[in-house]
Image 1 (cartoon, rainbow, N blue to C red):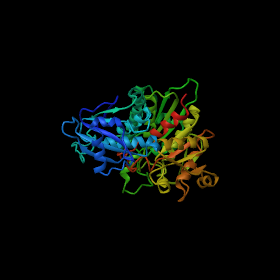
Image 2 (cartoon, rainbow, N blue to C red):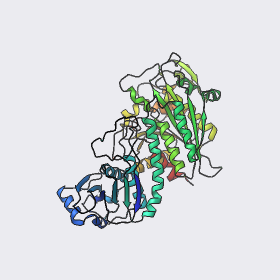
Image 3 (cartoon, rainbow, N blue to C red):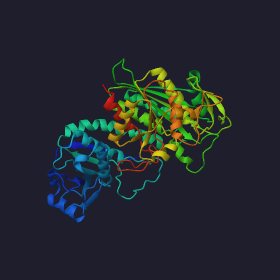
Image 4 (cartoon, helix red, strand yellow):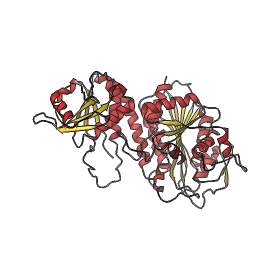
Length: 497
């Protein structure tokens, strides 16, 4: 695993060694504070020779003059400074980190001309650096240097800012969020032979070090609770199921919690309705929703969020054993509703059905949000740049959309309604687990809606965004950790006391 870079903050001064990073606007302008690097003429000359346009995330660099002390000067474009949002600063930070190379030291002149940069801007820039630094290479016995552009890690980075103490304070929360994203990415990137339901539950227990109360429900307890839908998915695997219940109590003692529920299918063969072999290896990531919930709980606890929050993850493996459930089987969910299982590869909704009902029944939350790599159909509809959002509550949907716009973890609201709900009616049970060829992501959401009652609820189908999503300046990993920053922002902006 890559070493985490060390990031500190200081007042403006001439950097003495390593890489000097300068921010440049689309007009080719830079802050006067950057002149300490080697004079305005050096930077202006580099802009002119490289025809640098200052486009957001663009890079230009040169060797430093002899005797300057530093090794290189790197220009990073910020685009239109007046239009920069939180996610833009993450991109700029990620782009800057990508050009540190193998230097052990880097200094950033975090300033722009005619623009007041806030401590939060500095924290977002640094967060982008941390997220870009992530690598998952723990199973490589021989490390390579890739293309020589990516830092090996362990680099010491100093952000020179107008108010370094305020920036450092803002960065404390960003560090907590980065740790949560890293945890989510690690969980998804782990191979399924290492990360089974029991092992995943053990990772959740480690959050107790941060003050999270963690309870693990075993197969015996799940049977006693009547979680027949979840257990039906798990019965084909020799690895026993688990449900992890994580509680962070940072709000008022009698305040209702907010609840997050994650699908945790550690590997999904499709069961008896087995998937094609091509690409099945990606199904080690079918627990991306559970990973995001776990990472979120880490982030909330690490930054001491002033909220009561519950995270519940259903952990199972879906295998085609002789004991596996068959197409046509009928199972009874914890809610008492019966489900005709027409396709054993529509298993995530069965896991979530019991987890949602349990969360609602036990905790009586203010709202529930579930995350799941649930359907390929959502990728057909939205591609891989938005998660599908389904909700029974307009206010909650609006809050999620706003959080998505702020963080770059964007969502797009999809429809629900009686016409779609009819598609999952069954002739032999209360419902069936698939609704036909068309609108598969919608009928999956309609299925889940039957287990939430009147509680405000949102379902996020993250199949296209949690695993194998297009890389960007701050995410180069197969597992993106999608959902951690989104939901942390939802909580921060709307529900913290």
